[in-house]
Amino acid sequence: MAWVRSVAFSPYGARIVSDKTVRVWNVISSNKVIPALRGHEDWVGSVAFSPGGTCIVSESDDNTVHVWDSATGNALLPPFRVHLDSVYLVGFSHPHYLYII
Image (cartoon, rainbow, N blue to C red; front, side, top):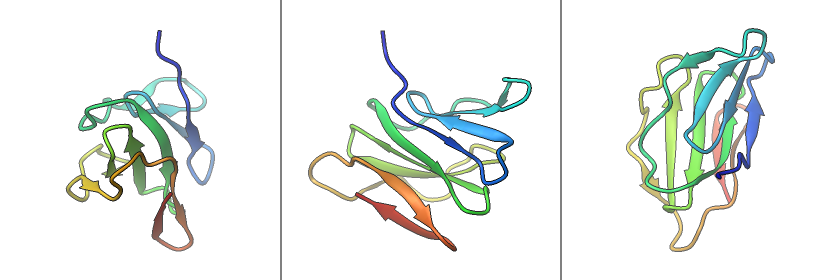
């Protein structure tokens, strides 16, 4: 069994993004908003919405970080490796700076 380790609310609380397979959910209906975001090769551990809600960032045990369009699920940037070891946390600070720990 796999556990969800991270969830994040969109800025206005209408959507939730969850890790594992990176899924975006409507808070009220609990329906998936877009198909699961595919690209990581291992467990996804941290997800976040950008301050405006237009982007989602995710990190994985495959040592990659992906940035997605939250409306379409399309990749906005090629996946990138930022550490030789595991990434533990990703997020955005205002206005659009990505941080990776």
